[in-house]
Structures are given as structure tokens and as C-alpha cells.
Image (cartoon, rainbow, N blue to C red; front, side, top):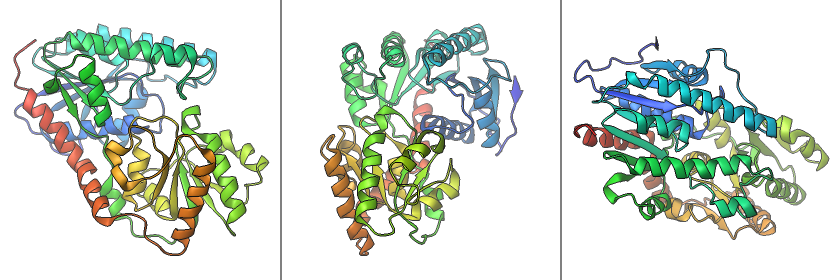
Length: 412
């Protein structure tokens, strides 16, 4: 077990212990769920919890990068490589890695005492089952998104289901196993990130007192610290290349806007050039589109603020942090009206009927024209309320409040 450097003094008493299980972290560039986990760890440490983490070397890397006061319990070798799971072989290799990490975690569960809290960073079986199997008096699981049903996987009626169906079938069965196992625990909390997931959890048999709705959070503080930027780009998109992200619709919108606006410029944030560079050139957009690679912290918000409009053509999402980050920068967002958006974002987004790519492009053009003319398209009061409710300071307060309210329960 390797102790990481402390960023702040941690209270010596009471020595409440919390164990985070996160075996699905692989990349050196944290995804949205990874960022949520790291903020949760920081919040727990700052309020006096002794934090210990089960996971691989990538999680250890992030803990060091964030200078978090945590103990690392490795569940795979320190030299474990980042996995590419886009091919069928890669998906099976990833599954085998999950099995190995799960087995290693179970073997080390004796380190979790009966008076501790066990916290699963995901709803995947390889994180949840060790939490369920542990002696910890309270089991906490985070639910980010509703998995596809078996019918949706078989008939491929949900847009995030790939042709091979292996990953989607794994996700479907994994979530069912995890939530079923968690329901059998006496003292538990299921943390969901948006209202529709809260409704779904109640339908699955969880009691209202067992479900807490706490959003992912947005780094509003860093966004506010970045001053307004000169508008160098008309539109911006940030994400990864996946079927559910609406990449075809994004490319169609970029083509349409480039034809209709002189000197049109678009910014794509993320390690996207290998997957999209050739396609951008084929569509004649090379002069209009800039790839800037992966960004984080203040630099990410500086680049977001240098654009006028955020494009969000995703066809399926949980609660995307990128939308919140765009809003925190004052960027209007045009998006398909997915069912999970309006209950959370309200009227802050510019909604387009699903999945009308032509209207998405034309609505983006209409909004862009107004923005180029200097109009403000976001209600300042509504945006201020959103930022207050979803700042990381507020989300960390809710998370630590949940832990404080439940940590006194008797042993299961």
C-alpha cells in the first residue's frame, strides 16, 4: 500500500475510514466519472475521512496529479498498460482485466473493517460486488446512466449499442447484477446524478431514503477565474468518438455552417485528430476546423470561452459534464432534446427534436447568426442559479453531508 502526499492537513479525529473501489480507470486523461470520483475523494479527505482506494495504476496516477491524501491499494501491476477496447479482441482483453482486478480486490477486502464506509465509483459489477461483499457498515454506489435493456441490446434499438453488442450486453447484465446485489444490503445509499435515474431506482425497489440525487458537478470556480476571451471560434465540441455522440450529425452541422458563414471556424477539443482528421479533410473542412487535443483546468475553460456556441448532437447521454462546463463559460448550447436534459438543465439549452440532423444544423446556424450579431442568448439569472446548484463546492458539500448523516449507522 503506497501513501500519497497530503495536499491539506487531515483531521486526526475521528479517524473515519472510507474505501473507494474504482477498477475501471485506465487512461491518463480522466473521464467525467473519474473527475467525479476525484472530487469526492478530495471532499471526504478534507472533512476528516481517512481515504483508501482500490484500483489500478491509472487511478494512482490521478491521485498523485491531484495531490490527494489517499492510500492506494493496487489491484493490478504497476506497469499495467492503458487498454484500447475498440476491437472485439480488445473488449475481451478488457473483460479479462476487469476479472483480474475484481479477484485482486476481493482478496484484499479484509483490509476493510466493519466500521468503515465502502464506496463504489461506478455501477459495474467489478466495483459494486467488492463493496457488497465487504464488512463495511455502509455501502455507497454511484449510478451515472441507465444501462440498455436486454431487448434494446438484442435488437439494437438504443444508439449506444455497438454492432458487436458485447460491451452493451456486459453493461446490461452488469448493472442488473450490481443493483440486485446492492438491494440486499441493509445499510446502503445509491447516489444518482439526475432526477430520471432517481425515478428508475425507485421502480427497481430502492426506498426513497436509500436514493440520493447528487449531480456530477461542474468546476464553476475555475471557469469563473478565467476572464472573457476574444471569440476566435464560432462553434466548439468536446468529447470522444462514439456512436452515441452523434459524430455524423456533428460533421453535417460543421459542413452546413461552413457553407453559410464566411470565415467559419470550429474547435474540437480532445484527442480526436486520429479518428476524425481524415474525415474532416474529406469533407473539405480542414481550413475551418482546429484540433487542439486534450485540455484540462483553466486552459480548457479559456478555449471554451473563445467560442460562441457549443454543439451537442449526442443521441444518448447520462448527465454530460461537458454541457455544464459550456454553460459555466456562458456558451449557449444546441442539443437534441434527450429525455434526461430538460428535467436537469431546464430552458438553459436550445433544444432540437430528436434526431433531426437537418434542423440541428439550421438551428445552430440561426443561433450563430444572432451570436455573431452580439445577442446574448442565455438568461443570466437562470444560469446563476444553475452554477450555484452545480458548483463543485456545493456538490462536495452534499456528498460529505450524505456520508456524515449515514456514517453513524450500526454495523450491517
